Amino acid sequence: MTTTTADRAEPVAASRAPRQRAPEGRGVATTAHLALILWSLLVILPLVWTLLSSFKSTQEVLGNPLSLPGKLRFENYANAWTTAGIGRYFANTVIVVGVALVLVMILGAMCAYVLARFTFPGNRLIYYSMLAGLTFPVFLAIVPLFFVLKNLSLLNTLPGLIVTYVAFALPFTVFFLHSFFKALPGEIYEAAQIDGAGEWRTFFSVMLPMARPGMASVAIFNFLGLWNQFLLPVALNTDSKNYVLSQGMASFASQAGYAVDFGALFAAVVITVAPVLVVYIIFQRQLQVSVTAGGVK
Amino acid sequence: MTVTPEAVPGGGPKRSVTRRRRPLTFDRASFMVVFLGLPLAVFVIFVVSPFVQALYYSLTDWSGFSSGQNFVGFDNYVKLFHDDIFLKAVRNNILLAIVVPIVTILLALALATLVTIGGSGTGTVRGLRNSGFYRIVSFFPYVIPAIVIGLIWAQVFTPGSGVLDAVLSKIGLHQFENYAWLGDARTAMPASMFVMIWGFVGFYMVLFIAAIRGIDPEVFEAARIDGAGRFRTAVSLTVPLIRDNVQTAYIYLGIAALDAFVYMQALNPGGGPQNSTLVMPQQLFTTAFTKGQFGYSTAMGVILAAVTMLFALVVFTVNALTGGRERKVKERR
Image (cartoon, rainbow over all chains, first blue to last red; front, side, top):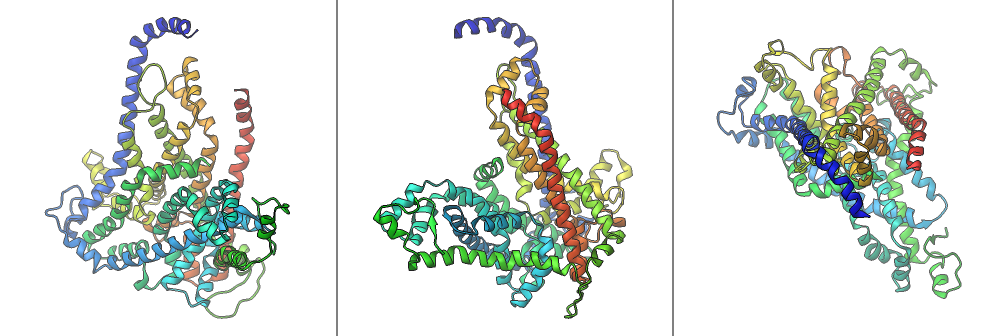
């Protein structure tokens, strides 16, 4: 059976392949490579230009944009870090994002677990209001949110920003982890209960470790989302001592429009991008797997 | 509150079961209070309550930090429909929500197709060799903060010191030697759209690559044997088969385009020449936090939310109306 089909197919393929298919195939591959290289250059070149500009003096930046920096001015980085306050913003961002990330992962996992594995009145209602919270634009809530924080004396403070980050990252976290906990086998829960573990122990020693792959994916997304958050800090955290990186960058850039240190501006951009890029290159496989897992769903 | 774990069959005869269902041991009571109560409290105080309050504030003339706030019914909305600047912002947002997703998805699909079925070879449809590099590079912008993407491109577009004009005049297009891409009402919007698309494409390319890889290879095989070329395969086979991913992508991209705040704030904080890049969120933000007109600005927020929901509804409807056909094809196969 197989041999007959092969026999029949062979001459056709043989007669066609050398004349048409192979060159056509190679042509397609070359074109594909060219198109992809073109796009890759479009992505990389602005970043390379930024990196080069970060070593230039202001005169050089305002001069010929295509020239190379006269020498490597690392003082731009020092200026950005201290004078422009990027170092301080960086520290603030690490604190806010770090604490918020840990909190939202714990709270989100707990909430998703209860919603996914227990039946009680109001379960669906809570789940759907989380879903709604995921789709509604934050802009609708931003003004009342401002006053909620003001009344709690949390406005312009890092704890206030942290708790807001947690609240707005919660729906996504719950939504994503819900399906993960739902899929865990029920027998394991029963086994833990029979072995005498209470609800607390069952969750922390049995269920949570089993949801680890899902937790990793959500944590990556939450990290990027919170690190890049712009609206919430700009609206709710207007004290320049407490600025996070994204808003610090924006305010630095708007000042730089009038005078100052363009080399340092580019250096600040590099300081902001470099850590994320390094993390990305280390975790890119995991990240792309997460994107796939989240997106295909 | 009686809590029944789903895994336990309700009212089972086993002793252990009845013991576990004993209502409110300290363990279970504290568990439910902390596990459900804590996240819900945060969610209700900081997410639900502001959304609900917004609906009320949008019906008041609340301005400034004074306590005076009168109920004015739909006056704010009436005013909004006569506010030329806000209407301009609405039009810009709608334009963004149409153009940005379409271009992003077309580009991402094209690149994903090149990676997955652009490989050379005679028999089977094969992925492009050494394409991991492109995937990694294209994905870069996704991890760069949007504000930084905006700032980088704002520098690239700057007349005189920006690299774009320099490159264009180098290759002989001297009319662009000092051209202000973001300062000219004709190009400010397309340039801003380009920046957003630049930031989005890589993510959706990776998404589509995964989706295409998920298609049964035999389907491609069959198409190949039937004599379909690569282009034909991509258009009539791949796209219908990953249709759901495209719909999801369209909704996410549309919502991002209806926001667009970060990008526009970085590229043209003031709304651009003749407000050509002004978007609703920018106008909302200034109205609220610069002018202090809180009632009026929350009404803008309600409109923004309504447009967002409407957009999602349109996408779902269009996909449902055209999707029936596709499902039948799938069944026949």
